Image 1 (spheres, rainbow, N blue to C red):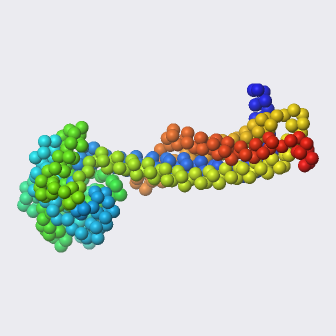
Image 2 (cartoon, rainbow, N blue to C red; image 1 turned 120 degrees about the vertical axis):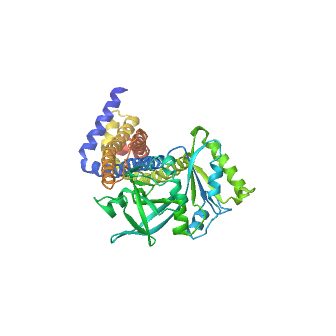
Length: 418
């Protein structure tokens, strides 16, 4: 039994080597398919880890309260499009933030509003994101770290002080190597004194945090936007084990504040970082399945190529099959020989594809790192097993029928064709 198996394997290798050109061309389709599987899975895993890592920089003990168009879902397209088209929800107020601050598991919070304006300093102009927030933003968001000067205070907020804390890129743009503290940049035709510079943070969720200017929330509302409502409230909890309970408490408090009894009429949405992370994991899981389904098409094409090649091999070697059967070879021996040829081709293609997948993933990681993104294309054991399993399965599935066809040839029929 073992001897017959060894003979079949040797014959398979011998025939593949005898037609090396055709073997290599057959490998190409499998290599492309396996490389695609590896790169797609590694890029999906790397992108998911990158996005989740960016979100975690805001802390896992944070809950976000935002305005929402009533009668639309929290994450619905109708809500997003409606606000993008200019529908204003003006019911989220400072008093809501004060009410939430009284909840038992709320440690601290900051209200926020934002807009874009042209900022300038001595002839240098740039349209920047203005982020109006409370004085406790550095407490709630650990990523807000002042490396020069200070963050603004509650008294600055109450007095509508025209002060600003800028990101590191804005500091470099406007002031270069000279001192930034005490200088004034012009925003919305008004002068704002630089009192602080933030530590470099990089790109978070496609937004360059280092190009943001932080202003006291009431200054932004009154002197730039001319509004009395908020865009969001960010809440930091005391015990993140009670995150879900705190979300429910916040929803109840907001309903009381806005006199809402029908959940469909809520003009706010409450989400925790944990919920956002879970949503992102589900989204990436679905995307990966879709992409794998698309890349598997190339494997099917490669499999069809193997089937065609095996059919040609059967026709070319009809006399050989008849001769082997005439001297005692069984149908099972012929079947194993041709099946092994198909499996060896796909397995070799799988190995080459995995190696190329590693190389392409490393190359993409390097390119993104040079662009300033800490995005790593991670090769997981799951992707390796999937790629190997795919390659062997394709060999068995697409190689079986031609191999079976060869094994069913009778010695007389095979020898007569020659």
